[in-house]
Length: 546
Image (cartoon, rainbow, N blue to C red; front, side, top):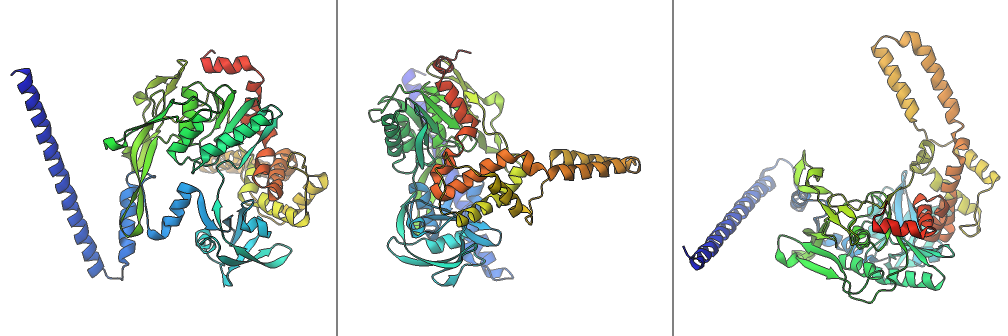
């Protein structure tokens, strides 16, 4: 067979195979839709109790999409506003986050500059009524729906403020746009810090503006904090990288089953600064667009990445508008950063016991940065320097978990009209003693690792019939532990005071306080300062010199 005939035969064969596959796929879809419809009809007509057709279908859809990955979701018409907020960071409302606190619903955080904060509502206020109707017993999601609405409309909110009784606030809803950059400032006279919490529209512009302002204020180095940032719009990640790298640079490419999803994204604008020393902070909460930014900065050897392993989400979602004003978000592609690696950590195509599994080490590949440093796919972004926050002590964790730090900050704010600037604010000895008194009738029990080990010993002694011989010693140790735990408030005083000062300062200075009060204790920030003070080490890391 000559070459021409072979080529024709190959093409015809491919068309036939493709045709058969399309017929097979069509038959499978048609057959299973018919089965589903038949089952649905039978349940609707014959099931012993009354069923809700819409609820049945919704649960079917959710179960189907849930079998794929956590990012492919269906949104009803009623959920459209929530989805729009996820994508745009904008909604009509009063500008406050609410949360469940015991049996109450409380203001968790009023956004600075929006109706709730401007009217005087505070973190810790207990929500009682909305437009005269009780909200007691509602979920935070249900309350949130009542508070949202068209900008310009009025809502009356009744709150109970501890030690102040009930208060009414008449608010005019506004179009709330949550900032992508809630804070930017100087850590030292020459080191600027930018916190990015989202990738909604204008994220790139916000970062550009923040870095430009910091440079004007004297910054010669930048710490760019992506910790806890779960991502967002892909094109905004490109715009953010563009702040620090040249025009025309490849940032990310996407590849999917449908070739229409195969795209290449390059920087489009002139950069702000391609030379300023840069440290990017990441952690396990840094995902998706955050990993595009941090991974690209690493691949291009443009900056040093510090923190802990990032989340590992290398999947791209697209929005599809459906009938009856419904819509869905569907995973359509994987993304690849400049070295060629995909940072996706979990394999949703091959689940084990219904759960996605991590990509096996044997399947991971090595790629190389611009300076030939080795990087690996399939595991998120690995920091150049791995540190991360130290975990809280047992008592501090318990105080946070039981909202006792939160509650004392509420009490303090209601008793003090003003405090010093965040970096200058410090609790007095009298304040800490007041906090200890505040805790006397509160529950915040916790079990130390040593107590757990003692309990295991006690159980084993019972099993092996030694408890009679050593039971007295175990009881004595238990009493000793109780006595020592009573001293934990003093033993871990420094850590607890830091938590209190941060939470209290935020009641007066909002996002700025949460950031500024932690600079001195933040190991990632402190490591970044060390690197900036040692330019040769900074360059050695980027060049792969050990």
